[in-house]
Each structure stands twice: as structure tokens, then as C-alpha cells.
Image (cartoon, rainbow, N blue to C red; front, side, top):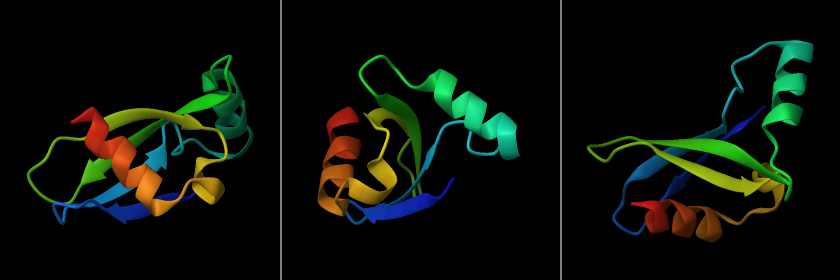
Amino acid sequence: MKQREVTTSDNTKWTCVQAYAGADGNVAEKIAELSETGDGKVPVVCTPSGGAQSVRLELPADWEEKLSDEDLAAAIQNTQ
């Protein structure tokens, strides 16, 4: 699974990755399936480059390709 970087309006750079992305191969796919909620959302962890605290989001399963940088940044800021 890929990671994405986004910068919020306060100039904090965030690196976001779907939770459990570090698992290998078939295990990662199975974990991703099991972690998806009933409404098609998956857990995503975003880690800042500076002093802010990491945040955990629930985003649509296709967030890596379809969620705009602006929407991802807004989701991060709404959880802080």
C-alpha cells in the first residue's frame, strides 16, 4: 500500500498511510479487508513532520487515488 504526503494550511507536512500497511503480501490484503468498516471506510494514520501529534482517520477505501489533497488536509485538521 502506498503512502501520501499532504501539507495543511499551517504548513505542517503529513505522511498518511493505511493502518496495517506494513504487513507483507497476502497478509496485508487480508488485514486490509478485515479492517474495512461496514460503510467502506478504512483506518488511515497520518504522522506530522513537526510538533503536532499523529492522527487516525477513517477514510473511503479508495482514498489513496480519489481523495483530493485538500480533502485529506481538511480531514486531518478536523481531527485535531
